[in-house]
Image (tube, rainbow, N blue to C red; front, side):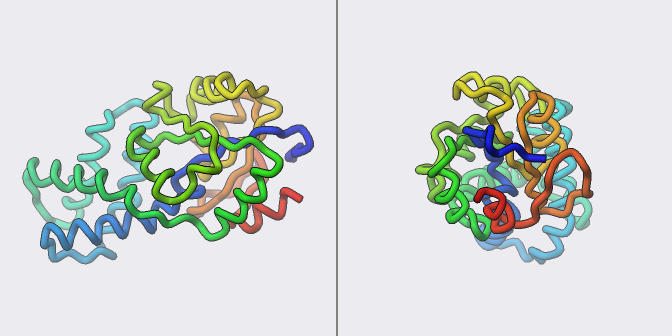
Length: 231
């Protein structure tokens, strides 16, 4: 049960929580396929890529693979599933284009700006994200989110990825916030909810991509539903 009367600071995740990663990522690949003149079905590609990307992000969070391996393996394995072969040079080029283009797309989840306008009147707002430092800051700027958030904590910057408690510890310390007065909102049970809960923070799960239901904290399925919690 949330105790919002105790909360003075809210930390948001970025991708899949406010910034519509799936939509922006699809538009990025659509642009790359045109630029590279690749006659591929975007729909078929994404059907393979999305779960593969999730899998390799999990390995990256667990420090099993590097950032560079994440960026290349997710493409390589997707193309393998499609029985396509690309040279290492081509994979590197597509990977670079993806990183360069992704943050230029500004689409947010429905209800993001009304929610943030409402919350900023009462709470201090910050971001905690596992995304790459350079890319995440561009996303925040290009999507119009920058005015709402005082600080952006990235795993690259802090040196630890969610769900490691250290990234939450640093965020609390740098914002002079007590854990019991902080609320973490994110889309990942593993990274956002369990990580922040282990630090003693309050947590709220925005289940934007059909994760299994659980009893660790309240779950909402839209930002409009979330906004209704904050009277």
